[in-house]
Length: 598
Image 1 (cartoon, rainbow, N blue to C red):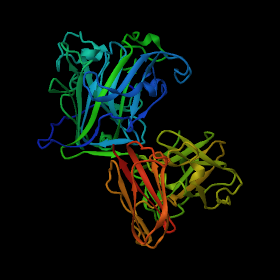
Image 2 (image 1 turned 180 degrees about the vertical axis):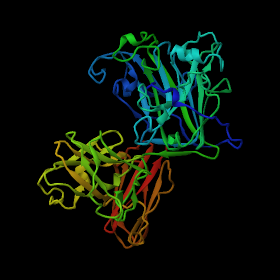
Image 3 (image 1 turned 60 degrees about the vertical axis):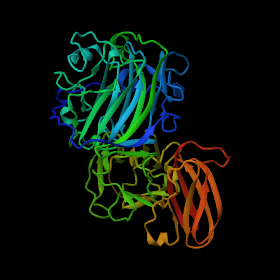
Image 4 (image 1 turned 135 degrees about the vertical axis):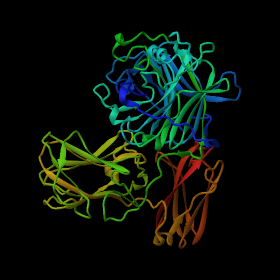
């Protein structure tokens, strides 16, 4: 979840009240857990126990859809924690672990921006060591905490935290609560003021409240908060966050007042995706941390332990609320990464939608003038034995439809430098192609002047790169320590699929229209126009880029339709989710997004 190394200066806030006109509006999305199509089930222990010293190994089979006990016909996401060990149940260094559990995320599947988010959740007896949570992380490609985090609920907190706040919100002031009687929430963002030797990340946390001014976890001694359902809500608009729990029909605020979003906490003005997990041990709890049995008490949580999430719903709140299904909207035809004069269908803008990074101080400013326009990238090495830099899209970039295209860039670099050009996706996968010294590679002539390279996307994507979720659409890397000064300019992706046909010349040849209905359940009609009669190929892909269904035929001049019944080429019904129709004709290509809901 997060590292709890937070600065006293993290929060200096003037709290505001909920606007009088604020109200809950229409339901805009709900997850009833009839299936897990909207979720990715994670495996492993992460880096140092997910950065928190957690003790569990996450297994996909520990997350299932299951009946809700005592509620016939109702299903939920079931996350099961178990005390077990065995082959493969290890930390990142291969040391054996003694617990397994489950973690599910909606990254690339569902993202939310604003609204009233509501989850109905039942927590097992967590005793000492259990750490259940339903939370959100920002979709931005920034590292945590710059991406932002919103914890709608988490239990299992340390005794010291519970004692600090137990004169409020149901507490009795006797410092005698147990972990099953207390629930809290949190939100984390980046703040320069929060940086100190103990908190180098700059994580500013709402729950860091050493003077007991603001945090208000909810206490219920008479009726512990486990083995029964409670409702957790996030009220979120562009100006504030409010976190509450409903118990017995009454809402209890988990903070004294709503948290006001300002320019410093603007992470909360971007989309977030959902997570749910049941962690064991680690820094949040009084149990010990991974690799350090002396850091806390032994885990006494009873196993097996079952956490149920009945539903997650998103309503409009104060007139705001957005839910995006599937990966980011895909770009088409041409996309500018760093260019002034090359015309493109879309582009990244430095310090607006992209950041330009130098890695580990390996480069400093150079003096080579731009190739085109007023802006260029020019760097010189700093003698650290290698260099790296790249252009990061702040939000994941979907260049899925550029699979048959090229990455083009211009560079002025000495011929004796061997370097690599690569891409990094939002999952951390990297792939590079090499430009050896004194060789002409991908059309780049090494004569000391500006030259252009054209790398086929099929070469630079490797086997694992997710083109739907790119983090760095351009990276340069050198590993031999050759000193140099170089310039980069006119970087763009070319020859993608035409998704939105805005060019009248293209529209006069062919056009793929939105399918209807969309979203659809049993049947949808895929519509397209052709300027003249001729052959066409219409292929449906899932969001991972796998071919699902193919249609081939001779189309008529003008309007054409193809019906799709939600089945693949083998006649098997496909799962709910996001799909893409791609039309190919002699006149060009186009693609559209479809949503199948069952």
